[in-house]
Length: 438
Image (cartoon, rainbow, N blue to C red; front, top):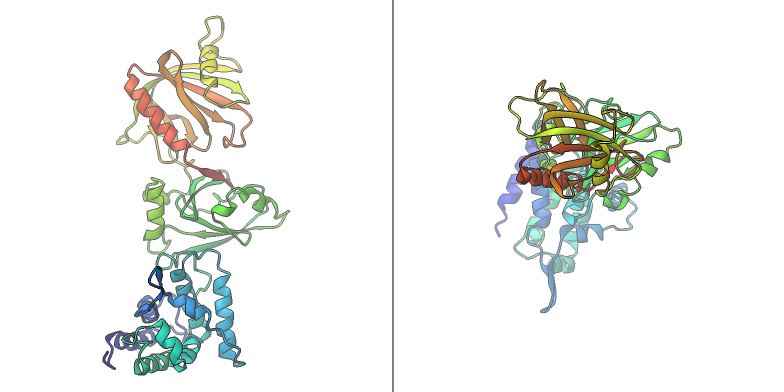
């Protein structure tokens, strides 16, 4: 390898670019246009030319984080102490699940503290470790090039960085940083949102319009609930979300939200968009802070299922599919003298049923007004009437179905049995997604 390695040449040029774009306070911030390129080059130097470890039966690729993590030494100088602290902080980052993400977080921590050169300084003096970890034709495996790299890092340590070291949630995925929203909410028992977990991230899939979180117009469907009262939110705590809020005991609720859409540039954050697609959520809904908001009128360009809305029947505390037959008999019983009472309401209107990403909307065909709107979190069951498959229904609770105590069955009719099957399948796919109320 030439002593004029192109990667080192690019790195030196990147350092000069950082300095040229420095802000008025002499700090390099996350907004510096050359920062990401610089960090990528640093990561490439650490990751290039690593030897595989193991034997003839099993081998695995060495990762840069592994040796950087173990490079903590007992030197008494301030820089070594700062490096040890940086490694400790990265290990405590629960949102990081890969060594690639940990390496990136360590680089950012060390840039802030001016100590990124510390592990390299000890490493270049240890010829034995150098030969084991890196190939000889790599920068860190070459005696001369590793010294040049060290000199660059020593120069970088004199530059003042002021990066948001807490913005680490998506470093496993990318060097790009999402916008982070930190809120202090009034004491409450519930945030009024629903989240669905995908790849250990809690995506907000529904926001109640009257909830405490809906009061902040910056929170949208598609955003990620990152932490709650200091607790990192991942699949291991999905059954404890409400207890985390209740444990505040009259204290403000601290919420950290990772935004899917940047409020200044309006750009979408691609890693979150990818997660939304896995849940079949349209990134376009991130414009709306709540599913409950809207004009209440049908969009002329929208599509749906045509049917007749027969009416509704109150079914009590049970919300399973067995109640559909009971509700049908209760609604259309010939022995009922009134079409409307406390337990039933006969409507008999032609409607258009739309199955969205987050719930069901039913429009009056005559007025185009929304007459029913329920999120999948409220729907406990759906199905057709036994022996009368043209009649179908879905059951909703008086709140989210996992905590609801009163249920109502909404019954519809269609001549097209195939359409009934398609509609029920669409509803079923929606409410069977695993959502959690907070």
